[in-house]
Image (cartoon, rainbow, N blue to C red):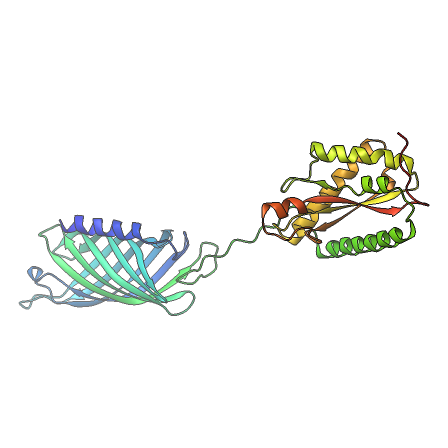
Length: 345
């Protein structure tokens, strides 16, 4: 019953706590002094001894440990002292942590050997360790062992130091904080210098358009209206819809009627997404419009493209209506000499 209770309690505690201690593969090397108290029926006095420990973490907060220890115990009734050897294997968990202090709970098997007794048994461990540095801890364990021969119960107190070493050959802290995952960069992001260049180009185009608008008042109102028609895009998309293709097709006759005309297509995006991502998305949208016009026979040298990303919002968000209005491509005149004429019908 004792063994079953220890095993059940151990399993419950291990399963109930998060795994945030040493990483898998971390090694523990320890040395300790021991005070042993033997069952009265064995006729042995308490003894002092020493031992060593080696352990490895199979998963965070759960390790396999092996110990070897020796002591010399006096005997009652004037009998000669005896050497006592102990070999132990156990599973040890860290169910609780309080800053640098960790609570230990273990269960395992052991072998006790003297010149008049050799027995196997099971044992339970309750202990604690205190991190003295990144790789060294003070450890104290209380152990109760039940021997198979005669049902003897022995008790021990171990105190010593443990050193921890990571599987990659470097020392880690006794309580290791998980490293945050690196932030992934969007595949469509652009560099800061490229962003600055695009913004400067867009500003120059704006200034040029405004100056031309003052110099060519005689341009055909219908032709200007056709060229200024805006096309729109779906959320996070740069492919052309049927309505966008229809609007672009209307611009082709104006191109043909005004061979000196050059334009800039400026792509825009709505507010969701990072600045870099939206600039790249706006550029893809402008490129899609240019590709369609070129496929209709327009010389590509007559078309410049630029992006403003989420700049110059038509409708302030958030909201789907605002986002839909901002996902657009605009057409701005660069050169129209001397003015735009309406295409022949």
